[in-house]
Amino acid sequence: MSTINLHHLRLFRAVARDGTLTGAARSLRISQSAVSTQIKALELSLGHDLFERRGRNLVLTEAGRIALDHAEGIFRTAEDLSATLRSAGARRKALRIGALATLSRNFQIAFLRPLIGREDVEVILRSGPQESLLRGLDALSLDVVLTNLIPARDAASPYLVQRLDEQPVSLIGSPERQVAPGTPIEDILAAHPVVLPTPESSLRAGFDAMLDRLGVVPRIAAEADDMAMLRLLAREDAGVAVIPPIVVQDELASGKLVEFARLDEIKEVFCAVTIRRQFTNPLLSDVLSPESVAVDMSGLQEN
Image (cartoon, rainbow, N blue to C red; front, top):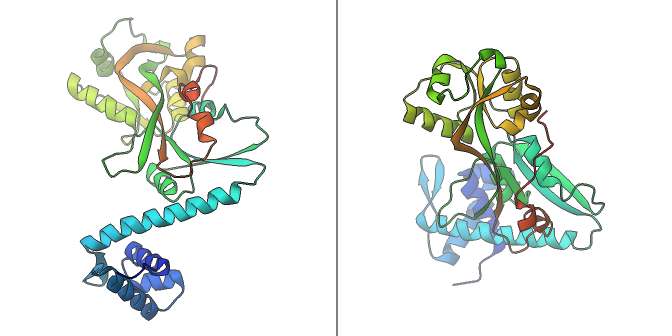
């Protein structure tokens, strides 16, 4: 078998991602015939067909899927090497962090605390949906993703998940609701409307499982995908909120809100997701070291 041409691999990856020769050629700014010729040359070199045609689209064969996995690994290594060597002589080091858009700001600040104030460090923080953040991790445009949604993993998964902290979750509401201490959770949910995290959140998944076990169908007053909004809805007495007490610690201390019941079977778990890399960003050791894993969120308040 002849030596694999990296240019051929790059064109192959573009076609595999787009599914058409036309789209790949457009993105690469070369002719469709040139792309087709190079793909055929790669197939000849490997001794296998990499695509099969289905309608107007090209679909990877089994050999094509294997080739794409190896190609992605080759290009990730090349990009990682380039990024590492470019930054080797830089005075300031950068850590690129992706955070789930709905993630507690308190947690994010606590995670960053070991780096805050360091003159030799630049922190680049981006937020977004989990799927987008994991793509950034795959593309090496992010060094770590902070989330409370643990990504699915199997033997082939490139993700490394490190549990950093967890917070208890409670039913919290206005004192005007006059819930007697020790009132069973199911009685509280039957008597009062609830303010909930949205269904895609980890807290909601745990809460829904608890409802199923208790056989309770609550009256939902509001749903929000942001802890700060859940806090405001609780303060406005929209209903009994399912929320970590840390989020409303000032209101609990002042008596503006009351913790009616602790949901012991539900925890908000915070994780850092990284990817297997040959050249790991050295700043990760400062925020993921054993001493910094249990982040301290005391004294912080969600905005």
